[in-house]
Length: 241
Image (tube, rainbow, N blue to C red; front, top):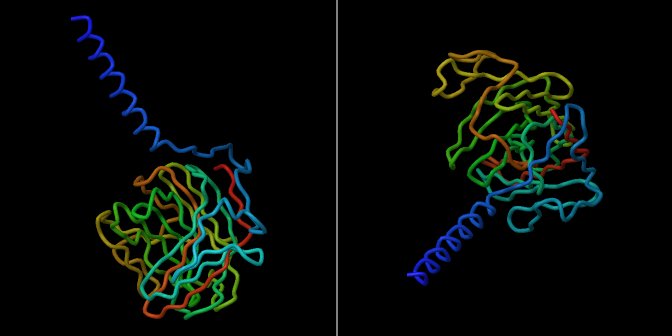
């Protein structure tokens, strides 16, 4: 009887250890701080071990003092993220497209859980900006592509992107000016922007969405019908928010 009890206890201990091990695999350090407290900065004159890099048909490399992303596939996206995770943050980065068509997308990817769950804030070389979300692999434009004079258009044009994330609220800025988002009145509807009008929705200063609470941050590019997009990112600074 005593032997049976000891065996049962060992089984319970082993099961508990397996459970804790499984939970530990999902634990991640999340950087946090007070508003205006510096959490992270990268001028990309190093940092090789802090960022995801690869060299295939899609390229992510730190070279010549910038993070450079290139994609030779059409209708395709690629990104590079930091190892550090953030919940609330105030992020600013300088971005520019250096090759490819003007019909492109490039900018910030944030609260990245994995390749199936994240947000993006992108601009294009033909003068548009957009916010989207991917949850469990399902992509949704939270705010449609909006043409705006706030975007410095053209290849080699530098844009200064800023994202502020506080809980389930997000603010977006372009070159020091707030970029409003087009939010549909029906939360299940698709964001639509045409003729300088948010169709069946409102232009808002703040996006509210509680799908993803924290995750990695990084840089992203997007190709459409034409491939060959290449963009560079520099002077990334992240403060507490």
